[in-house]
Amino acid sequence: MQTQARENVLKNLIFIGSPLISLFLIDSSVTDPVNAPKLFILGVVATGVLFSIAYGISGVEIRERTLPLLLLGLFLLLSTITLFTSNLPITQSIYGVYGRNNGFLAYLFFSFMFLGGLFVSSSTTHFKLIIGFFAAGLVNILYCGWVISFGDFLSWTNPYGNILGTFGNPNFIGAFLGMFISAWVAFAIAPGTSKNFRLMSLVVIPVTTLEIYLSRAIQGRVLMVAGSAIAVFYLIKCRATNKFILPGYSLVVLVAGAFALAGALQMGPLTSLIYKTSVSLRGQYWLSGWNTGVKHPLTGVGYDGLGDWYRRMRDPHALELPGVDTVINTAHNVPLDIFAFGGWPLFLSYLAVIAITLVAIIRYTVKLKSYDRVFVALVVAWICYQLQSIISINQIGLGFWGWLLSGAILSYISIEKNELSPGLGEASRKSKPSKPKNSNVISVGLVAGIGMLVGSLISVPPLSSDLKWVSARKTSDATQLELALKAGYLNPNNSQKYFMTVDLFEQSQLFDLSHKYALEAVRFNPDSYDGWRLLSLLRRTSDAEKQEALKNMIRLDPLNPNLKSTQ
Image 1 (cartoon, rainbow, N blue to C red):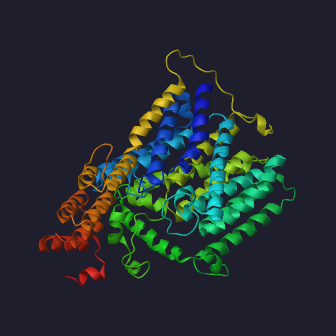
Image 2: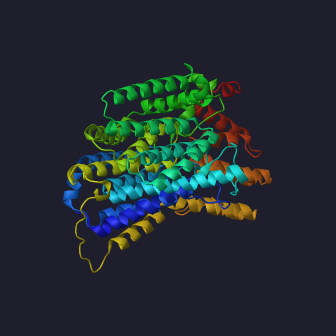
Image 3: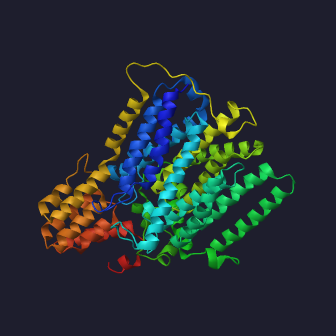
């Protein structure tokens, strides 16, 4: 059994660390203010969570969670195998591509967060998880409100013209606010909710709705409506006395959902409200992810490897829309990304983790007699994440919530089913903590602290590399820029850093250096189309090198008619 001390540490890590992952970013001193910083904080929190769980873990605890642990273990084993079967640069497989950081490490840390939710043994911690989620949402609401009213105080470039939140993209903040408002509604409509919370809701709900609208993110609107409708479904199920109300409400919601889906596909009366050209674009992105997985059914192409394969795997229709020169490094669909990363084995193991959570939710919902705001909030936030994962990217500040909520739902249901008597008030809904184990040498806090230190050492390299490159660029010193390209543990290279440095050298008329590092870039990743294209454009590139670059560009983009016309 877990000790009370371990539960307290786990509770604080989840309560404080989880919102920090969504909120943390770095301004000015890096080229990527969002993803590398969030990966760093995720690593710190997630590894601290793992170490705290490992403190005094018992065989009973493991046996109680056998199925999710086996499925997660299979997912991690298959993920590790991709590191050896992929032809990607190892740093790309581990840390992910620049600006995404959805490599092996991100999913490893997501898995640790799943374990954190799974090993929670007190419903008080589940409540704290929701409060932490609300805190991240409220901070984003305040920040977005400031931006709308006075302008952005951060120095980052905003090409979208819409609010970005702490996620750096209007679609991500829209999706997060959709998740947030759905969970908030689940609390607001709960019987017995305090008057102060409901009064606060009179401000929070309309302001959040406005900000979702101003984000221009359709997914935010969809999640807000769908999540809130699910929360109302639970209220009706648990409170309605007429047996026809729930089926009638469910039918109305299903019909509305069908019209909304039709609108997204350019059919029906809601097309003008829901459809965006990006929906058609996503269809091509999804197809490229599917084609990549089908082409590599057993091993995939490696974590964050889709960008190197998109041109080879895209459908011929993609040359028209989104266009021959429009490329992506993600399928904009998390399951299809994973299918491309690891083929059928990894894909099915990921779906299995989702499936056991969904089955647990359905079984518990059927038996649910009284409205439980914590359970409903966990469920609607989880469902909203799964919906957005089908049409969007696994942005770190969003993605970890899906994994944490999966584990938390499983543990919450286990607590409610096995350790609680039905009909108890929510204040008494908590598992009975075991007596803390005596230890005169090592405390769980110390173990968690060691874990956080280990996590920081594992996750800091991409952030350290970016900081070093920006520092070198500010000096305008060629020697410093060259040093920034010297690979090391705290300075892993990536293709984008090569491209930015080569461009700086070429603009500074340091043609020999730009040529030298362009050659190094294509050696670093021979499957980078952009690397070969950059080499072909440099002043010092020889005719023979240009022919070699063209040959590789045709290999990597066989459908491109512009390349064929140059032969």
